[in-house]
Image (tube, rainbow over all chains, first blue to last red; front, side):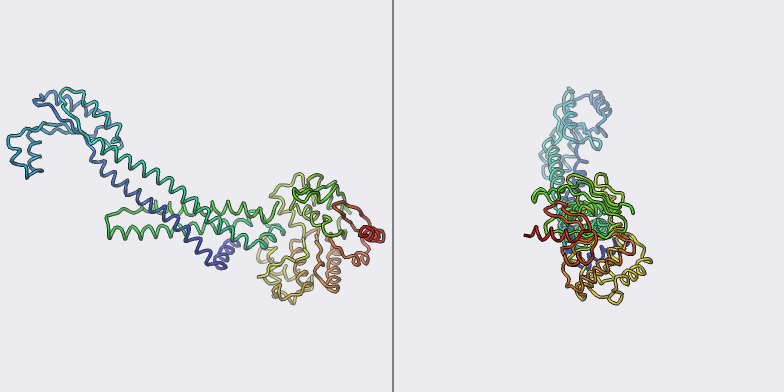
Amino acid sequence: MRLALREVALAFRRAPLLAILGVVTIGFSLFAFGLFGLVALNIRTALREVEDRVEIRAFLVEGARDAQVDELMQRMQKNPAVANVGYVSPDSALQRARAELEEFRDVMDGAFLPGSVELRLKDGMRDPATVADLSRRLQTYPVVEEVRYGREWVEKLYRIRNIAALVGTVLGGVFALVAVIIIGSTIRMAILARTREIEIMRLVGATNMFVRLPYLLDGALKGLLGGVLAVAMSWGTATVLAQSLMQTQFFDTTQMMLGIAAGGVLGLLGSWVSVGRHLRQVWRD
Amino acid sequence: MSGILRVANVSKEYPRSGMALRDVSFEMQKGEFVFLVGHSGAGKSTLLKLLTMAERPTTGEVRVSGYSSFSIKPREIPHLRRRLGVVFQDFRLLPDRTAEQNVAFALEVTGTSNAQIGPKVARLLTQVGLASRATAYPHELSGGEQQRVAIARALANDPFLLLADEPTGNLDDRATHAIYLLLREINARGTSVLMATHDVAMIQRAGMRCLELDHGQLVFDGTDIGTLVANMRGRRG
């Protein structure tokens, strides 16, 4: 193991440019991945905030009786998707409208606004299907005149999120593949540069693992360093964005560690594949 | 005397170049010194590759030190190789390491402790007569000296059999003779030697057991060097 670590250090010293190139390319691959991750993270946060505001409003018929309204509210309260049920009387609706639309105050004198029942939904129950289902149910009550919930808006939000998830998965996969190929080819170059050494190692009876270990460590280390670089670049980008454009959210410690570890795993994977293929070319057993 | 090496009805066929060995059988006893002769392309190198299990026979069996080509597992091959020493015509030294580092390399990669490596390397270099050139790089050494370093490296793990693939092919007469004497000395200390060569003068002088390969077939196995040389000249026409 100590010899293997020494070999890794030697590999970095012997071909520093190649090593730096490897780390930087991995860094950039993971950085692209990280940027996308940041976008996804911020979309998710924004969505969550927007989702909090998803509510269903059932406007009541004129002259709805209190008993009917109470019954409707109690039934709705029992629904597992509903967090809470509120009632807006015709008077308070008018007051609210006056306060919010001050410039139309004159128009509203003597006007009538219908009372309404407002449903707030629980976390995870704000998807289009549940919302549509609840609205249909509300519509069956005779006391309900009309139901509004911003249907298109809710559906659009979800569509954005689904597209984001899909693009993220595809891009992430492509970048991971690129990182594996890059590490693989730097390892390939390292192996080809040391064909003779490897040949002699095999000849005098070094075990397979002994021959492989330096390259595996080399790949893993480059991956880890690339991961650190990617996190640093993502952080820099996020900071610049936060200062100049808008408030952004950055990864937490666990997510950063996961990113760096992902670099290590990619590096190890790339070198594993490459070492397997090229050692066989150098010496067939 | 006991058998350390057995080659039984071995043939080797390559997909592109065809049959390299045809039905070759012979044995080697402990402590023997055997020459392997034949023109280039006769199958000498192929045979040596089969003996190190770098390749497997197409048919037949190679047995070396209790390992059979039928049943040896990939992870056992390194352990077999530690019991074999191999030297080549082109020395195969690492150019960026000194003579002693080249010898030490064989010990390092087989997990010998650092404390043991230093004294052992010094002893090996003394054995091959190169103690004074320990810190020289290969390009600073003559061909004969480089081959001595390669032999010291081959002996590093105390092999019971030394395989030498035309070790004097790149050397002048004086160096050739010196390397031959060194191999005889190593043999006298108990290590068996199988030496491939096409140096007829050397095998005539040595008068020891010879194996001759011709177009992949073993056409001679014995000590009657006169007959062997006559056969070889006859074939060359």
